[in-house]
Structures are given as C-alpha cells and as structure tokens.
Image (cartoon, rainbow, N blue to C red):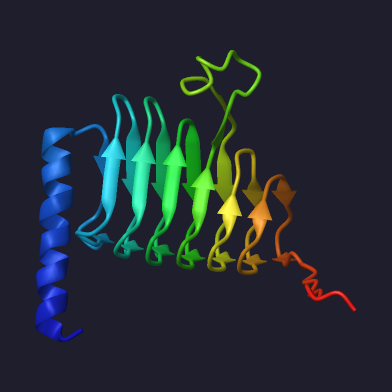
Length: 185
C-alpha cells in the first residue's frame, strides 16, 4: 500500500472513530494514533464501552460487538489481523503489545442451554476474558469465556482455549490426523 493510500485510510479511520465518539460519547475512548480499518464493524449497545489504547491497529473484516453493559479494552500497541471477531456480553481485556492473528474469535459468554429452548437465545452465562501483555495469538484461535492468558505467552494457531494459562506459556493443541482407506481389501 503506498503512502497516499495509508494517509487516506488513516484519515477515514479517525473520522469514523470521531463520529462514533460524537454520536455515543461515553461508549468509545481512543487516541489519535488508533487505527481501525473502515472495513471493521463496530457494534455497541446501550451502556457498553470500547477502549482503544495508543497505537492500536485493527485490520479489515474484523468485528467488535459489545452487548448491553459490556466492555472491550485493547491496550496500547495491540493489533488485530483480518477477520477477527470479538463479542462481549461482560468484559474482554487485551493487554499491551498483543499480536492477534487472522480469524481469531473471542466470546466471553455462552448460551444458557439449561433455560427453556424459547429463552436460550436471550439468556447467557458470562465470565471475563483477560489476555496479558506481550502475547501472540495464532490464526484461527478461539478463546472462550472465563479464559485468562498470562503475560509473554504464545498461542499456536487453531487452539480452542478455556481456563487459566500462566505467564510465559507456549500453548499448542496437538491433533491426530487419521487417514483410512475407503476401499475394502
């Protein structure tokens, strides 16, 4: 991308964030060095809050969805690659210097499957997601409610995480690939 395109895209990003700030002043905080692609969807509900730290980068196709009273925090020097999905019904906090690969998804909630079927769509069980500082999250990772990832950790591509992971962890989920013949012998 040449310099002129970068300047135009950055200008559109600031105007877009600024217009969201004007329309819903309490729902978004950002600095002048926050960059959110104009191809990123931001969907915020009543009393929700999106906090973008200094030098944030959110690439095209990503979606940030904040439901009523939810919070999403992206601390400074954090980047989301293309097509990430972050949906919060309670709180998702992503620390400083975090690199998030493409197609990563984070959900701080589950449907309450124990409620009656007709109520299941509107009832959720929530628990915050906390991602520490200096974390690298590989492509296609899914992070579920109640997950805490410690500082200086690396998450391998395609992991599905739920629970607590200590500082300085390398998390890889090995899979077994079975190849069988479909021809009888």
